[in-house]
Amino acid sequence: VPTQLLNQRPSCPPYELNLCHAIASAGDDVSDDFSAMLEATEHTVPARRIAFRSRDLHDIVPIMCEGWAASAIALSDGSRQILSFLLPGDLVSATLLFGAPLHCMVEAITDVRYRTFRRADFKAALFKHPNLFEKISKSWIEEKSRSDQLAIDLGRRTADERIARLILGLKERLEQRGMANGLSFEFPLRQHHIADATGLTPVHVSKVLSEFRRNGLIEISDRAVTIRDLENFQRIATLR
Amino acid sequence: VPTQLLNQRPSCPPYELNLCHAIASAGDDVSDDFSAMLEATEHTVPARRIAFRSRDLHDIVPIMCEGWAASAIALSDGSRQILSFLLPGDLVSATLLFGAPLHCMVEAITDVRYRTFRRADFKAALFKHPNLFEKISKSWIEEKSRSDQLAIDLGRRTADERIARLILGLKERLEQRGMANGLSFEFPLRQHHIADATGLTPVHVSKVLSEFRRNGLIEISDRAVTIRDLENFQRIATLR
DNA sequence: CGTGAGCTTGACTTGTTTCAACCAACGTGG
DNA sequence: CCACGTTGGTTGAAACAAGTCAAGCTCACG
Image (cartoon, rainbow over all chains, first blue to last red; front, side, top):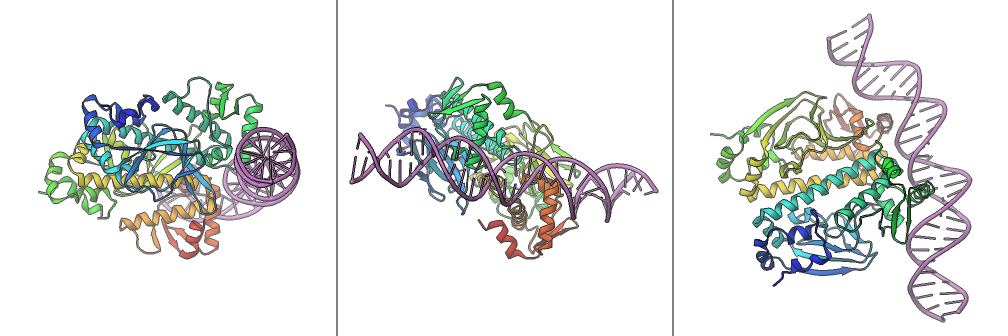
């Protein structure tokens, strides 16, 4: 009898940092335990809808199964900072596992499917299976490392660098998940998402992207991006 | 027989998020275990010296005991982003506990005294004592939450807001540690530290601080800051 | 006494924002 | 099938926040 966890494997392809995978592959010997311990409930949210608000989520832990979402903090004047884009396999935030309330909002960018677990169950499983614990640690180490990168990008890089790095960073994460392999990949972000993620205005994002297009670096259309000159595009992102 | 951990209590006053305290107070029943399991080695670093570089620290976990330090990422052109200021009781980074290599450098701002533990020992203690684990979780939840705040500060706030928030944030952390209680407190940062932490240039930091001083908001001298008009200073930091 | 690190100030430049107008694509209801 | 509002993107001109450059100051330290 397959567990709920194994059921979700088809939509979460295997790669090291994917939590669905981490759970599903934590060891054959433990999957029976999981089926007993961990009940998952599946949910969907249509594009453009807020999935969770600050202070929601007191005792459940959601994991992305399908679609793109953004977790963001909003200022009272309406401006927002996107802290990270959530892709299939991502935990909304590793801190939820340890009882922190959600301190940002999560917005669905595309239609999103996710599963929730009861925090207590998840935590118990974590302690019972060092193997799983190890993988979850890796996952939040990466979460922290990306958030540190965000800080230096916002604090010390120009608009061009920030945008190029955002796109290349997403490319890499999609590749890890098997959701991209060439120079062309799914890219459902609106320019205002890019703006909120890079600390710029939508207007300026449009100008920079036009410049990139004019210089034959990348092209964005139909919710997909194509990198036309990888070498120079990477140079913009990393020449510093 | 007092343990090495309890020995360090005098320089690490008791407050909820202080790890020294967390360890020392994890429960009377466990302190014997600690003395057996956890060997601490004490070190000192003079002001202005780099304490650790990226990729140092493979199997030790340092905890601040005394002094101020900064953890920062450097770009190849010499500019830096300070990710956080480390105060007594802070773990250099909670990710070190779980095997991540250090991905930033740590610079001593004042003379610094710290202790190191072997990671394996620390981790073992963590698993053995849920009480301790709970406190460490709280500590890294706060670490994450501060790093998210940093992102929105760098991405969406003006120079005045960033600087005011930095100073008020440090005030709060010092108060939690019993290292400040009034409107005047220790402040060993140079303006270039403030610049590196806020993503600004030292010149601009000087201009903003001069403006603050001119408006009777704060004063900085002799490695100490005095807040002269708390209400308006807080307004600058939070009016948005 | 000289040197270097840290701070201040002013003039000028640059990157980004703001404002505004406009266009294209799309879904909806009459 | 067309009129219409909405959402998303483009472009240019003007305003502004912060950066750069440069000079001069103080102060601690050898």
